[in-house]
Amino acid sequence: MKEINIREIEKSPVELIADGWGLVTAGSSKSFNTMTVSWGAVGEIWGKDAAFIFIRPQRYTYEFIEKEEIFTLSFYGSEHKDALRLCGSKSGRDIDKAAACGLTPVFTDGGVTFEQAEYTIVCRKMASQFIDPAGFADASIENNYANKDYHKMYIGEIIKVYKK
Ligand SMILES: Cc1cc2nc3c(=O)[nH]c(=O)nc-3n(C[C@H](O)[C@H](O)[C@H](O)COP(=O)(O)O)c2cc1C
Image 1 (tube, rainbow, N blue to C red):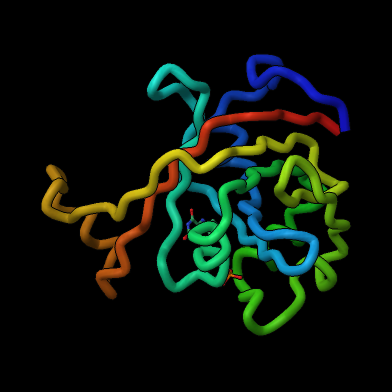
Image 2 (image 1 turned 180 degrees about the vertical axis):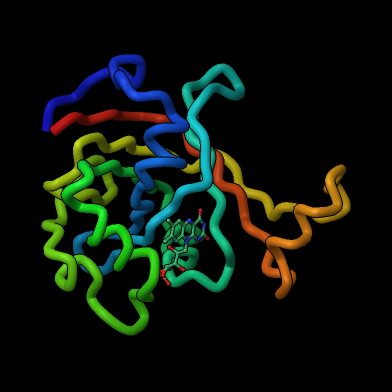
């Protein structure tokens, strides 16, 4: 893995996150979990390069992100789409997802990513907050929340970016 600047990633954040999907991973070499995300953003806040992710509270990964200071966002070539499908449909409560989809964990900067990642963005948790439906200007957003399981948004300072 070679360290790069976030500005050296050629793909737009929309291609990277919405189209390609990514893995959010948190934990340590003793215990970690990963899950697929396609909602999120990369930009700037409070004068820092930052990533924004949205995690529903019932996810097993939520427990790790709540505990840990570091989380990673990692992105993969299309040959790994099945792995991302698995990590987005099975819970780490039930199976060892990394083993099941053949991803090799790499422990770095206090976080966890995978050897197969094309890009890894290492984030230091700066703030988190549940989405408040009182703020929905567009009432149809509520259709995403039949179970009132509003996402928690995590804002992470981008502290390192790696390219395979
Ligand atoms: C393409 C795709 C995108 C997803 N994006 C998100 C997301 O942004 N936030 C979220 O909470 N869940 C998202 N999910 C669902 C989780 O990845 C899924 O529930 C996963 O099994 C949770 O695993 P865990 O219980 O081990 O944390 C997505 C699933 C897929 C397939």
